[in-house]
Image (tube, rainbow, N blue to C red; front, top):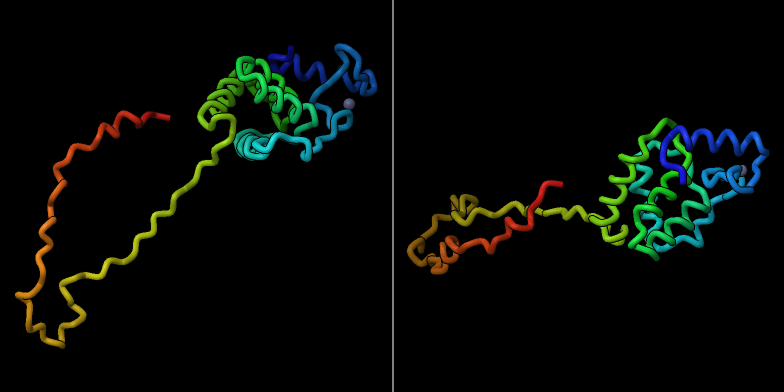
Amino acid sequence: MIRTWTQYAERIERHYANEHSREGNNEDSSCDVCYPPDISIADPTYLNFLNWFKGTYKIRYHTSRTITYYSLARKYPLELQKWVMYIITSFRYKEEQNFQEMLDEVVNQWEETKGFQTERFQTQSRQEPSESSTGSKNKGKHVEQSSSRIRPETFGEGSNRRRDNSEDYEYDP
Ligand SMILES: [Zn+2]
């Protein structure tokens, strides 16, 4: 199994020296001439993964082997580490990578997103400009019945309630 950048680079050289041979050690899963990617056979979550990967590492391209290894990683979660190593060494990159670091990062991301099933939504909190109830707009109208304003009786209620340990769910990413 390819584990280091040196092994990876040697594999590419060997593969070209042997004219794209797919036999034994000459095979190269990161060659898109031998393995043109076909996204139509990919797992539904693959695009989530690919988008994240592209945004995180400087890649040139993926191959059909990447897609296959990704499916196997989903199928055999107990062998996740192994398949992720196969996945990352089946990409081509623009510059040298540290595969061990990458392995840890991808596995972490995998677990956090439960296999890239969840996209992280950015909830847009819409803050409507709150109308001030003091009625500064009605200044010219002369408010006659200021005493009839209903006092919100529930005001303040619950403000001292304990937050149900919500802090327990926070963590440092
Ligand atoms: Zn090839």
